[in-house]
Image 1: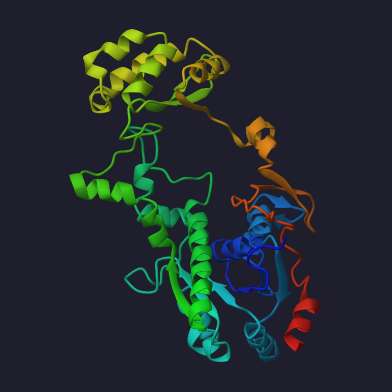
Image 2 (image 1 turned 60 degrees about the vertical axis):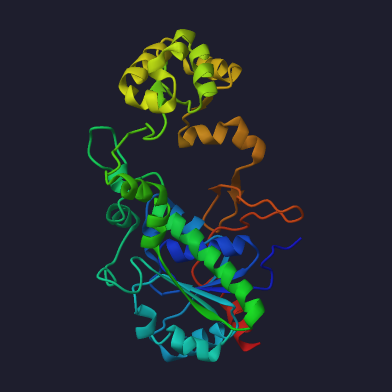
Length: 381
């Protein structure tokens, strides 16, 4: 069956990651996504690594989309863009504040030619306030939102999360959700709307518990490395074969199970370690005891042992491990994505599973202007 957004058309007028990724998510749900590509391309095209000259980040961000190149400084191309806007349900943009207004494509203008248009505008720091004109990248927003101050090795400098573009990824999901909600509202009102979004507030939102923790205690959360500030033990421990295993025990029953698995049942009867709050007060001592024990056996042994005693645990995989992991293979989380630029593996299979509809990316980003004939026929229809 077709996706739930079949019949919805989305216009991508964004740049870099956030807006285009949101459009890609809408495309996964069945919407038709058309991107207006500047004649100079997009910055993500040149972000390493490249597949036959095209950045993998761009290829993934623009999956399931069509592409037309328009120079919006040229009158003929501007007219085509306006005609295209008449044909779409959603427009997504994440450029600098006011950029589309200066180009003549702001909400006040385009809503007059398409009153049912959902216009989703995401700015890095929002559309008001002292930071309104600041440019940004993921790690800058991580820094200014407080996220960086929470990450790093215990006793070391603060660090930003490098493995993923955390704020961009969260921001794109928020844009997608906002578009879905606005489309539902349009079903009731029959009218389009302007949706005001920003990455900064998304970064704050995912830290809600830490922010609440500060206001409750007036103490800044500390950098804890792999440890939890609220649960002890909850940490990555090094095994005999120089691999890490993450172990956690919060409740009394979990603590007893862990002590049994460690063959140190006497620890479960030590009054200093009876409850989680007690263990937090003796965090360093507990971690030293557990580390000394875990380093005596290899990872595979501890995976088996902790499984036997129902201890919360996990091995720590790197990206290379993911490809061969049996659980990932069994669920088909990593899929092969056809691409004009060459074979590409895409992670992951979409996180939504509908009973009668299978949703997966069908293509990576097309060549620039690959769908010009189709888009022109759409405009003229």
